[in-house]
Length: 153
Image (cartoon, rainbow, N blue to C red; front, side, top):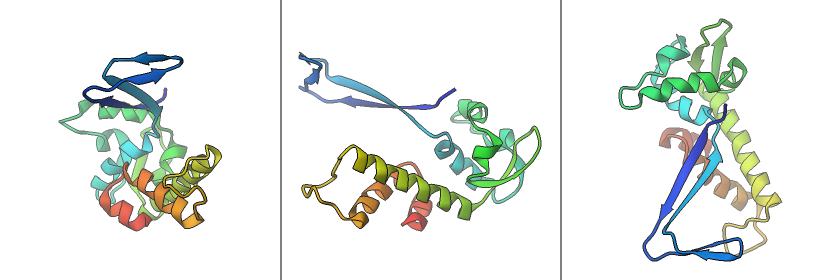
């Protein structure tokens, strides 16, 4: 199973170019794969550095289906952002250092994708490594808390 982020753009009086046609619909929906760890990290942070089964961490009255994230994640993936005790219950404790290391790798992946796709976030097409890194940090920071974002920068 894969988790997708759905992004909808709805503007007044907008047309889109689709292949060789102009479409007058005012809504565009884009879906992209999303690493489920981005959704799980806030719940791990709330568990207050205690070892807990993941199914007890992923509890949210406003979003009861958050428990479904447990089916999308392996112990190996959880070990990227926390300490995991081997068991069938996915017992985990948040680890800030591991999480920052994982986020740094995510930023590096975004930088590489930007370069490979020849995407430049500014007018200057010859960006420095630092400029690419800051832009990629901004993209990744959209998916994490302000506190983690601050630690990432």
